[in-house]
Image (cartoon, rainbow, N blue to C red; front, side, top):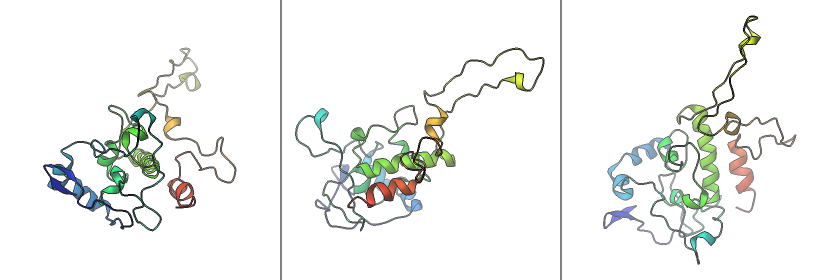
Length: 209
């Protein structure tokens, strides 16, 4: 990204067919702390000034594209999504600063895919890396308060447990689903955000990417 009139400006107008450079997480963290990043995005989320190219009203816009970068690492569109277009940006649980930009204010839930401007591949990676960040402790979140039934340990205890209380409007089972329940026998980790391998390679790479 280069600067033009103080805002983010892409000096390569047509990226289709070009390769996206690869960088490490450490380079991404240093880039997000640099003056170039601050001058480009002005302290706002990276999707704030992104606009999709579509005809008609925003409420009737078509679903996002499946992916912006093919299996060879080349752009297949000129107007890539906010994460694909920046060569330093990609979702990783070790850099929660980028993931937190796509969370609803005051919660630990991702914003809608149409509001984020992401392609469906990056949105799936956002949810997968968000789950990994919660598991590794890089992003804090609220879980249910557990009420114990002390009658199981104390014979003289007669008070029943208190009513169930939910914090942040979400249950622990929704964040960390059990992969052994209600899923096919030979692919229990499919469609439950448990395994990043199926999210990345089974959903996108196999379907004509």
